[in-house]
Image 1 (cartoon, helix red, strand yellow):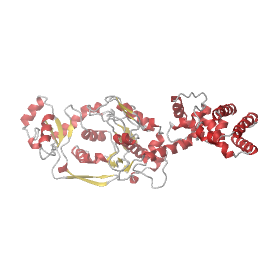
Image 2: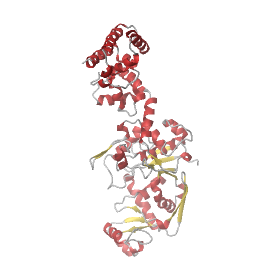
Image 3: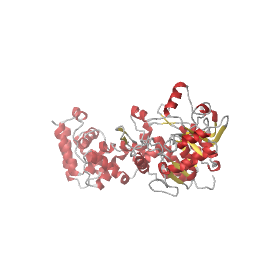
Image 4: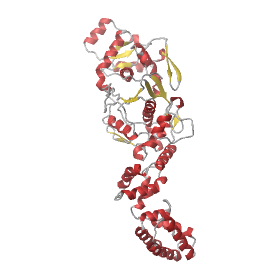
Length: 506
């Protein structure tokens, strides 16, 4: 690696929700930058005003914040290469586009959208390029006088790159190795639109140069655009400054056939966006991982393993561990199949390993959203500690812990009544007296007392454990039953036994 400080960027368009593939691109950029003591830049590519969606930029910033990824430079925090929104840099792009025209690497094209549509109808596989450009309305086919006249009249026009004939352009991709393209297969892409805004092709090159970006990570779907960008770096005289590129593998559908899309998520019942995205234009709400109940640590962990591994069997990584272990030579060329069951496994593992204090606010929100009032945070922390190993998603905390805060509304009586006897009623009435009079109310002591009483009454303790659990919880779930009783306390345990006995004996 050169002595130049590493600078990477994530440059999303504010056109909608943030796909998990986009967050993985953010993550790999961030890991590479931090591993190498560099800067991570967030740049908003809002040059296509027709696709701009209100609120999308704030949504992108919120997603990064939730993930715990903080840009070193961005539209919010600023930086030495501001502004970081391309719409605010509009004036400078024309200067470079005009320079390309003067030097013979680009040209003015005056064709109307209607004329181009007509060509597409009449000519199969029509491309605006070297085959047809001489027969179209542009500064290569028109005289200099005609061009000047059209420009003086402010005739709407675009500026297109002039792709050379019979050349090969190539570069060394940090993931894919040597990649080469034939220029004859690439059309003359628009660089500057009629509204004066640059297209992605021009803006990304100019901004990467001016912002001193050293490494550019993007999805492999951008590979076909690479020849245009390679030539622009060359034509603008900046080839020596071109960032090293890494084209990341696609995240594939669970069956491995094609890129994972929002439609696939809707069809298969899982999110593909980082957070809920509400499109004000369509009124459509697309679900996100956060609202489903994923921890950001788990979300980043699962994304890191989609196309990368550290060469060991380790699967659970903190962000700091990912920074330490990340290397591009462990990124796969092949696409990575998305497995939602595996994604949930990551979340369950992260819930297990999380400190109870770090889960408190999220669990509190889950419970309060269901109408449970949390009056004692210390008690809540004890509850979280008891049930977190049983939760896969954050909303599971309601089902797994609501009985710690309110008595069961229903009982799984079908699991009790067929084998219920007067002797068992007698046992639990005796157990109530035992609980009332015991000096120490601790799980181990309570279990010993329970089993001793069962032996005294001539009943197998195993036949009493399930009814006891259902009395306290309402169903066949939850942590160790004596842990539940002790956490509920003597008075509440007795109250629940008495209430359940009424139901079981009715």
